[in-house]
Length: 104
Image 1 (tube, rainbow, N blue to C red):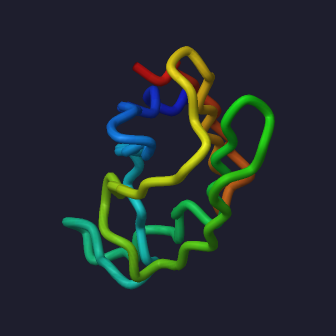
Image 2: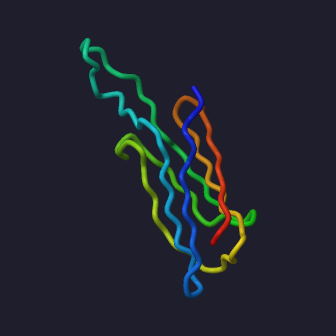
């Protein structure tokens, strides 16, 4: 199954770039039982990397304690309109997703 696209917003305002990242993902803890009473296997994002124009601006480790469809919001200095913001994640199954958008 192909992971859903990462939704990214990046806007430059007064010298700071505000970024919002929505990562569609089930984020299963391995502790929840399905309708048949069987535990649902662990499946969550473990690593997130964000770069701007090839320069890293955020690196995060996630655990099973993060809710479904995680939303990250942060800001940084040094971005320019048109610079590409790239977001990449890896999960417990080795699945990966990378998407990018230009700063507006």
